[in-house]
Length: 216
Ligand code: DX5
Ligand code: ZN
Image 1 (cartoon, rainbow, N blue to C red):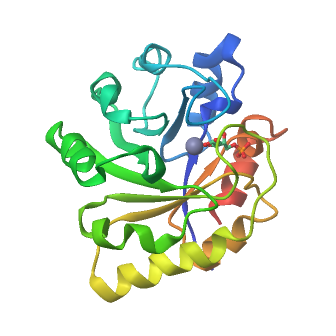
Image 2: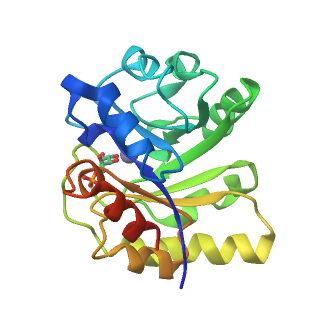
């Protein structure tokens, strides 16, 4: 059976006890921490900025997987660079010169991710795939946690999995939104390598069990 890595989204944590929540899920076998940054412009919600992420620097034992849901992300990329930052992911729809943004992220010694919204066709990334370290397929409209999984994400995951095998690309394939123990097998079977899960991990009665079930 296919296995995947997991990147729990701290958007679903209890912000009043963020450090304790993060320390707790880190004891459950997680691989990354997913940092959902929303600007109230690219998406209709505001989450938190780099200082909240940095408040976890002393607690984080797994790398940050930063998901910037912000317009013109180049303005803020430097602010998310820390020793713990492994990936900074921007949205294809939010960048006017994606090649330049990828170069910008790489110039800081950080791996570059690109995300596509549910309405965006996977082929738009074809010309960039050789320079991308992580492809993030959204399986909900970005903006809120706790939404229903859209299975239109499955053929997109398969598309990037096939492209990767055919061309020997090195990017990781990640999916984000509405995933939990009951449906994680669908994205794993489609070829996903990293699963983002917010509510299904932080709000689980047994977080360790939820993490294990999602990873497969
Ligand atoms: C949505 C965010 C997701 C979301 C995942 O804009 O990018 O990371 O918080 O949360 P769940 O797993 O609750 O759908
Ligand atoms: Zn996300």
